[in-house]
Image (tube, rainbow over all chains, first blue to last red; front, side):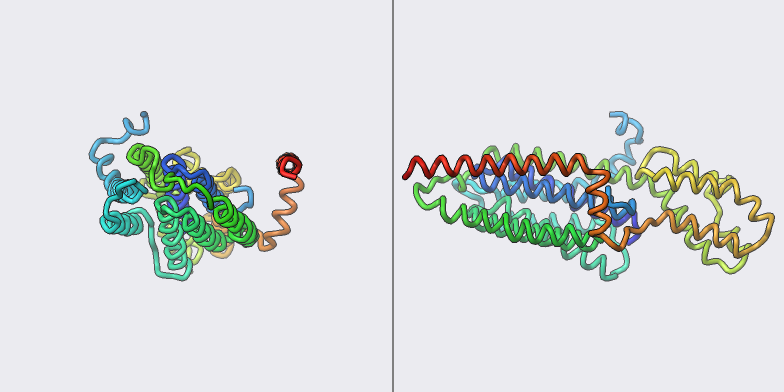
Length: 61
Length: 320
């Protein structure tokens, strides 16, 4: 995988995790499951930031 | 809106269906699998979810050679997305918490693949070790009395999944557009990479051939500075401009080694590498550039600790 392909793939995974977390937050009624969904959205954003950090070669992302 | 108007219609439709197919399959699957009082048969939803996952892996992910990073990426990404879907659709909250632990562990694998070992270790310890276990304790201690049916119903399942997948489709579409428009730049950088391994000046000349009748570095500078696609770091643009002005002199000099050295320099700065001492650099960064953010986060944690202590001590006074 070349560097831009790798960035693209990780961004896709981050977007999917974010969208699934959003669906969970909107649809579920249990407060704890809603909180877990928000945490999953956060994981998606973290994957995004880490992928950009690797692509740009700095730790700021 | 201008984004859509720029593109002629057939191109729009051609670029759309590889995104629309996995997104629509996933929408149907999650919509069927979300908990309902009288649920649909789980098998249909599971088959649709599997089809959505396969379609996403086939159409959305740009694969390459089957080298270890690619295989590991497929494995971790598949586990993360599957466990995420399970977490959202699971009726039992304890099982949802365990699926969330699996999501966290799989994303930690992705972090490690992207050269972020400290983040991986911290996430394993804090999320999978502390937060999920705390959630499991809360679930097992607090849900003893008065079983409600809140876990067996969803709030507007159709609207919620539609909202989520419309967002996902829009994000993927823009991502795809950005990827396509930055393609020429990366192709030209690949040309630089193969030119630096050439054995003669004629070979370098033939490798560095722009698509139109134009000077190679002028074209590269134009594509880099166009402002579309993945943003190009300013340092790299500066290096391309410098090499573009130096190149005629190097060519007139006719020294193969100095030409290759210049190309190697450009190639190295186009593929930046992270510092090997990950933790040391993170610490330096946190206490210089992001000092204010660290202090703010610390203050917030202090306030939260004081609040937690205040709430719990008041409750024990009332009961005793």
